[in-house]
Amino acid sequence: MERDWSSWPQEYYSTTDRDERKKLLQERLESGTADEKDQIRMKFWELRYKTRAKMPVGVDYFIRSWMNLCFVARKPGNKFQLKQQTEAIKEAKQDMGFELAAEYGESGEEVLYQELCHGVHLYMQICQEDGRYSTQLMGIMRLKKDHLVEKMGNELWKVSTLVPQTFKMEQEFALLKKACEDVFWKEYPKYVEDQEIKLDRK
Image (cartoon, rainbow, N blue to C red; front, side, top):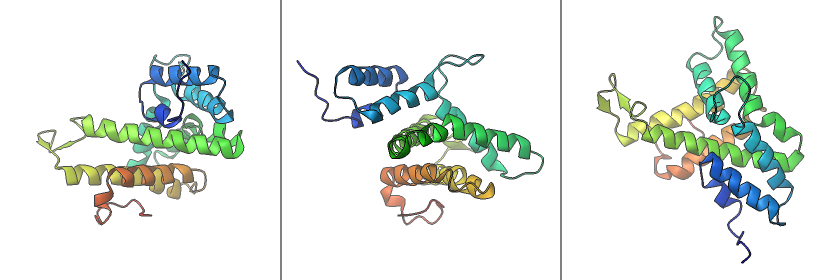
């Protein structure tokens, strides 16, 4: 029986398991229904998950890049950390797929945006499930949901807006900004009036 692809590519972006994602992509590519964007998706899969020399197995390079940008966002432009911060941003631009997307024009940009949305959503999920992230006062008190949502929203703002502004790279990271805003406000629409959250509203 021929596989039903009516929910593609949503099916691919709804799973966070790296092996399941690869399996779905391989099935798609072997089905005879794949298009150029599916070929590009495999390139993005390899960039994000493929094991690299001298690196541990199982690294998600989107999450790794995001954590590096979080480090930069603590004191963006700090003169004592400028070299490390510049290197972290350059590496994130590569590992998140901005340079890869540029090779494929509009199709590459579309797949990049989809992958960024997937990565941002995964990071938010990790934050919600991580007891350390959702606590305050030395990990003793758990944050109320409102404060947790504000914390996530402002972290997304710092990484996707403040860091690029500081380093005059707004255009290069414009799709990351859009992905953060789209994913966050889709997940938390009722917080759109919360002025403590700095993310731009649509």
